[in-house]
Length: 274
Image 1 (tube, helix red, strand yellow):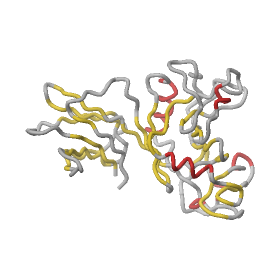
Image 2: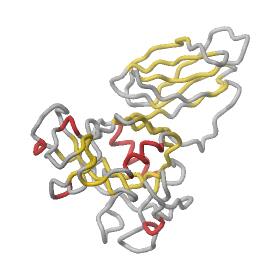
Image 3: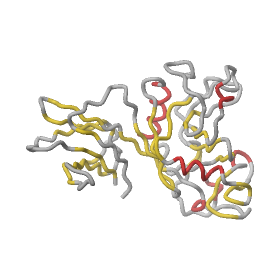
């Protein structure tokens, strides 16, 4: 079971400025990312649309430039065990979005941030593709049509995964098979053509967990993961001994549950996704 954990004491109300938390899961580890909902609302909403509709399902990192970026959100496969890489498909395109670089607070393309990819020379061309900065790339902030790349989140845990991309080179976890896959990260050492099972997939799920008091009763709410069992758990002590409060099927929408049970000590909550 893989899970995203977010702990909250029931007596603490989470500020409305708290961002959505997203987990990027890879074979090399997980990255927990906070999205900047308040500052880059259209960019975050666009990204979450792809997540909630399943458009990012079975996507993989299709570009890795060590010491620069690791990019995904552009291509997927319907069969991760297939051998014919030529069947890679483009992610559903929901259209382009306005550039929000100057909206809200300005965030630089520093190490560990996530930003939207776009077409060179077209400021307002971001759609489905995103990238992680694996180095400090402040030049991408420059005020011209080739830059102004919009940062909309930051890795809170799992930067070791990003460091792994920086250690690659051609023949050592990186191959060139032409076109947009001329910097394709793979799981092997060598120059041979990859099978789909040798790509670096990234599974994305999101949870914006909040706890507040509703008529003195703790109300736990979160953005549920569609098609998965979403389990709300609690503990009263640390090290934690987690107990199940409720199991529910995710819908992709916000779900709220109340903890009406008698409480003699404060509780911490988390949501676990199968």
